[in-house]
Length: 397
Image 1 (cartoon, rainbow, N blue to C red):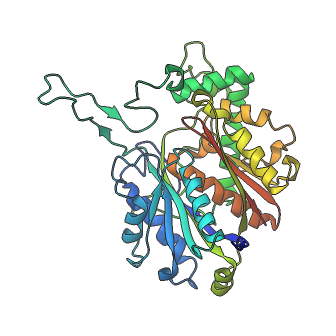
Image 2 (cartoon, helix red, strand yellow):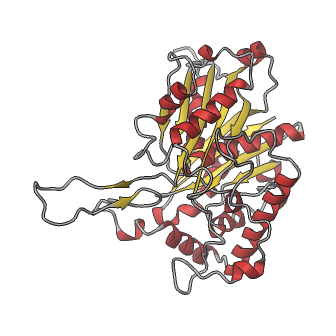
Image 3 (tube, rainbow, N blue to C red):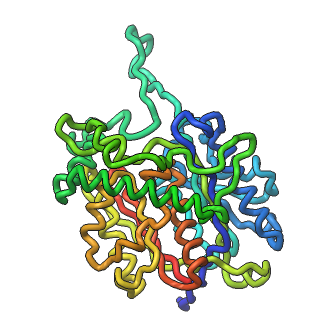
């Protein structure tokens, strides 16, 4: 069979909502409305694009059990007022879902199946429902067991080894032990994340990518704590072990939010008259023992860089999702060639928040905007993923 050259794929634009805290300003907004909002805002920013030319909309979502059921990407298309001819698909790679959407969208364009795809992610952890399994037998006498779908394991298969199904926080404790990350380092890392996020907002560095949510008075990320301190963080008790190191202060919070990116091939970029933010490069996904999920990005980043023929010293912008300070520091400790100054320069998820299905799209868009501001360079976005995976994506300009 004849070989075909893969086409270049460009990130033309990227937007996100402010990230809301659990039960906060976005708690009253349905996830399908959050997704529709960023989709409509994104498309409106490229007037040279006829929305009917969008070949697909791919959104990541980690829950799927509530109001985002029945394919939230397709519901977002309809709610955003796009032509009914525009399709939509929803993907789930848990915390990596939003980035997985970008990867799949880019792949479709690269192989020629599409020319324009919107990729993104959405999560409302505030509105995640309780679920009740169907009884094994008719007419059960006892009360039904209910499970929260907000975060983590539920309705676990009994064949799963117990060490695989520990809580995410306990997994962070294990990673902290294995990689020698102490409480003081975690608290200092969390404080730095808040300070960088607060400074970025004060300097207007998010103004070009954060779009408002209709009917909500929220103009910046809701969990950024400008006034926190090492002393305040040190007073917090460990959450998952009595003698542990992982606290609410050095863990990402529960959040609501959405993000979306506009991806195009070169011909369509030229036709719309837009200057791309960045070009999509290599990607990699890897697996690891489920309880050590926090270290998942280590190999994924190394594989993606190897595919691109680059080293860590070539990275100019690095967005590492901060699920926990412990896991972020564990990963960074395995990348001695990486300049710490390029990592999350505008703050990370410890401050901004981690709306699960949206985070991968958020950090990918963040890398694209930072590369555009620099004018050139190589960027990396990476996440750890529950149940033991890592996902990484390179962007270049």
